[in-house]
Each structure stands twice: as C-alpha cells, then as structure tokens.
Amino acid sequence: MKTALTIAGSDSCGGAGIQADMKTMTMNGVFAMSAITALTAQNTTGVTGIMEVTPEFLAMQLDAVFSDIRPDAVKTGMVSSDKLIRTIAEKLRGYKAENIVVDPVMVATSGSKLIADEAVETLKSELLPIAALVTPNIPEAEILADMKIASQDDMVKAAQIIGEKYGCAVLCKGGHSLSDANDLLYDNGSTKWFNGRRISNPNTHGTGCTLSSAIASNLAKGFTLERSVERAKDYISGALAAMLDLGKGSGPMNHAFALTGRFAETAE
Image (cartoon, rainbow, N blue to C red; front, side, top):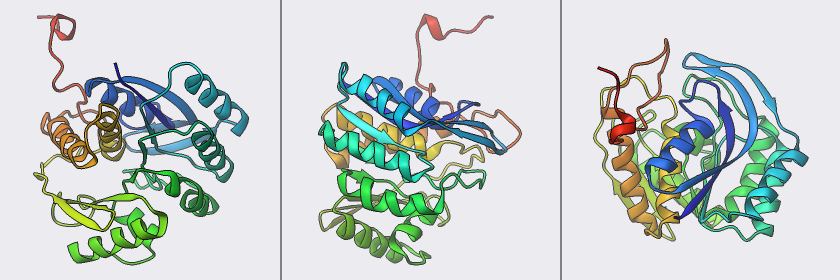
C-alpha cells in the first residue's frame, strides 16, 4: 500500500484539516499519516481558537514518520507561523521528500485568518521552491502573484508568475470567486484547464484540504500530475454531490460518499 503524509492543523469538527485529509487519503486508497501543526477550536461557523505545537514537537512528529513509514507523497496545509514553516521545509529537504503538494492555507472557508503575515513570506521562500505542486484559491493566488484576479486570463497570468518565480507546478482554483468551477494547471510552461461541474451545495468546508490531499494520494500511487488532478476533481465532485448537510454554517462534505460494505451499513 502506498502512503501519504498530511502536515496540517486539526479541525475539531472534522470537515477540514488533518481530519479531512486522512479521510480523503483513505478513500483514495493510500495509508494516511499526520504531523499536526496546531489544534484549532473550529466548527462550520468559524475558528475560535488556535494552539500551535512547538517547532521542536513538530520536528519530532516528522522524524517519527520518516524514520519508520516513509511517505510516498506529502501534503502541507495550515501552518500558521514562520518557525513551523521553516521546520517543515528543513525536514522535507533533509529527508528528500517526494511529491510535495502545498495547499497555501491562509483563510478558512468561514473567512477566519489562519496564518500570520510574516509566515506568508516564509511560505513563499521555504515551501514553494520544494513543492511539486501548489494549490491556491483565487485570494491566495492573488497574494502569491501580487496581482488582482478577475478573469480566466488573470488566472493564467497569476499561475505563470507563481510557477516561474518558485519553480513549481500551480493549480489555480477558480471555484472560489469566479463564476465557474474550472481550475487551471500550469506546469513547466504549459497550461491545462480542468472543467468542473458546479454543484449547488453551500456546504464547502474543507474543499481545499480535500482536493490537495486527493492529488497527493494519486501522486503517491504513481499517477501523473495531470491525471492526479483529474481524479482528485472527480472525487471532490462526488463528495459535494452527496449533499451532506451538517452544522449551522458552511458544512463539511461527505468524504465517504463511495464507501460501501457491511461496516458502512446503518441500522434499520
């Protein structure tokens, strides 16, 4: 069985963060592992508290994973401080980690800010250059490319700026604020659009975590980057189309929409 590691924050309601990542990785056929960067007091309506781990403890978690069950792919999510980002980059470089997917989490679906300003610069300088892929939504791509994005042409320009500056592939996600669910992959000078079906579901908590984890899972299994993105988009469409409705705010998706078998049965 192939393996994948998520390095991210915990979501106490289970819709985003490492909980969403591990559900996604499991449903996409890889063995999921985690290194937790922070505990959050969080639900579908917002984030009420963040308690970071120390850089030393994060390093211990990463050492524990890499020294025993080496991941075939790594996904990074919420990392809120400069020192934690540096710790992650140092360890991933030291262990020569492969198939690194960086989800540059800056703002939660609910609108809560999840990263310190100084950490954004460290994310750019330390994590992006070692990434195989970075997966910004429109607001995140605007920050990384230092430009306003109001059209698909702007998405192409922003992805090109990010990709050329940091030497990584870029998946610019259009579903956040443009009128479609089309995503743009920029990889080494070439571009490809992935047309998504827009699903009328207000419950989108954890979509970014889920997509990046699904891509990492497919990279771990040996699929090409393009095919990994395609498969990940199909998976997230299924999770959204299941129309799970939990919580009072922007609720979670049903990551286990395709789960069948006697252990998934409910009581009559």
